[in-house]
Image (cartoon, rainbow, N blue to C red):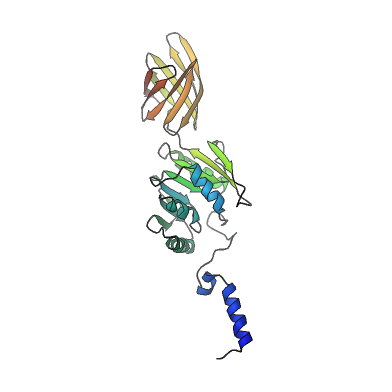
Length: 268
């Protein structure tokens, strides 16, 4: 079949205006399309970059993106040298992400699996990224709090209920909506009674925040400004500032003004 020159020209111009994926028949997701747990709205690239920067992602990290969509966060992490995994329930999105990773030249570091978030193991992650709804975050929170202390969690826009973020930041350039990121660092578990020198240190823990007291002799001194950052711990006893690291049922560090301290957990 032959076409006249004007018709042929119009067809060529029309074809050139179409996305390559549409011409080839490749799957193209639509913003707002229904998913298993949430609708798909991609995180703006400017915020992706901010989230990874807040988490201080390096080549030493293993990043897992929960609900990875078109793969952009996983691919961006891989470009930083990290190993990254996207967990996505939509199989067409998974295949699209694999193609996108191949185009970006990071298939050796970026992988994607079709899986349910609530049935997935992400215990190997050093960084978790997500753009999920608040109720989904809350359902995942108990599992996240069981991760290794120091694991960084970064969420686009939505929070973790009463677990206050360790850091919150927004971007303006290159982002029109959903432009705020929240960072949490999974804290070590220290609630209980500890033997600290000749005293008994009692700690109460609410996520990364600590209260409690030191009982020594017949006196009891409240601790103040207690906080965890992963396995790092700080608190004040009177005028002295204690800082150190937690390792299971022991912790040790330094005291302001000089000196060392060690504590062993007696009971939880």
